[in-house]
Amino acid sequence: MAFFGSPPPFVGATSSVAGSSGLITQPSAGDQEKFLRGNATWQSQYPQFSCHPQRFESGDYLFPPALTTQTGNANSGFLVCYPIFLPTLTIDRIGCEVTAAAGAGSLGRLGIYNSSASTNYPSTLLLDAGTVSVSSTGKREATINQSITQGIYWIAYLADTVSGSAPTLRQFNAVPMFNFRKNQNDSVFQYNGGYRAGSVASGSLPSPFPSGATLLDIGNGGIHIIYLRVA
Image 1: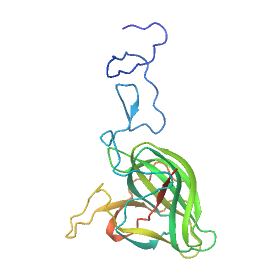
Image 2 (image 1 turned 30 degrees about the horizontal axis):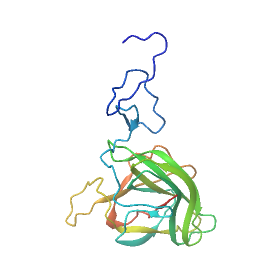
Image 3 (image 1 turned 45 degrees about the vertical axis):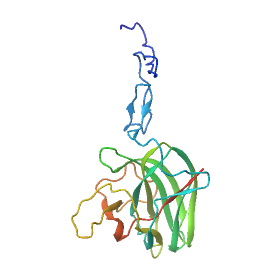
Image 4 (image 1 turned 90 degrees about the horizontal axis):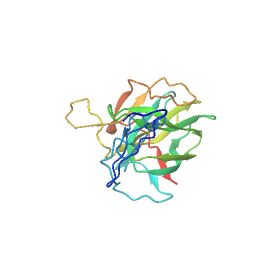
């Protein structure tokens, strides 16, 4: 079909009506992993997940179900993240638990990264939630307003500013995370639960996530429990 002047918009098909060719809607920033559907919408690459096994209501907290927990240092400059599958919802809190305080003025920075479908690696930054004080013990939360589209995300903590001794945070010790990668052959069948990048500067979270991060075994510690709350 020949067009004279500007082409008409691309019209998607329905179950009973055919679509028509035309100008495709421009994808938004962050849609680089999505594909164009026949109904003219940009779709996540995880359409096989049509539902979530749990029902979440306002005020519910989200994180992988920990069988046991431990504590560990959040050393300066370390950016740690773990993967989680989320349904479509809005998040209004992100937080961590400080079990041993650092010195006055110490800060932890929280955030969420998108996931690369081709590499199972954290990719572009979805949210930098800012910093929370880690100079006293207890739950530390940042107030946010983040819409989530169903898919896999990486929840992150950066030891942004450390004064004196590093704080210790609540960490996963045994948790049924999905096995996103396995790179060693051992007798106890340990599997990887997250990534840790070192020498990350304080301030805004880097985007994309630093390449070449260290894989962390879920049983060996180092993965901080960062939780989310449903709006």
